[in-house]
Length: 110
Image (tube, rainbow, N blue to C red):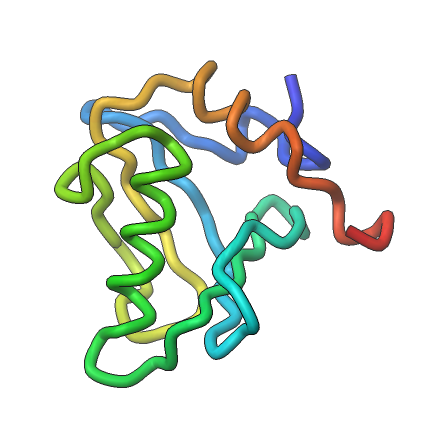
């Protein structure tokens, strides 16, 4: 099963849910999934990286996209960087892949 070029193995399971690897572009025109590149989902966030605004916007976006409460979306690595690992607590692999199925590969001009 793939989402764009994201292999299921790139969504490691965790005892509490699924971990998603992200590369975040801040100060974009809107918040959205961009594309899949080298096993990570590129995500655009409209908020600037000031006072944790970009992380808060990312958490809100991912919670809505995956149908989770905001408290179930936890940045577990990369709090202050562009590369992040986010734990989606309570989510299982199949629904995660379903949400990401429309995200295209960056290599295809996504």
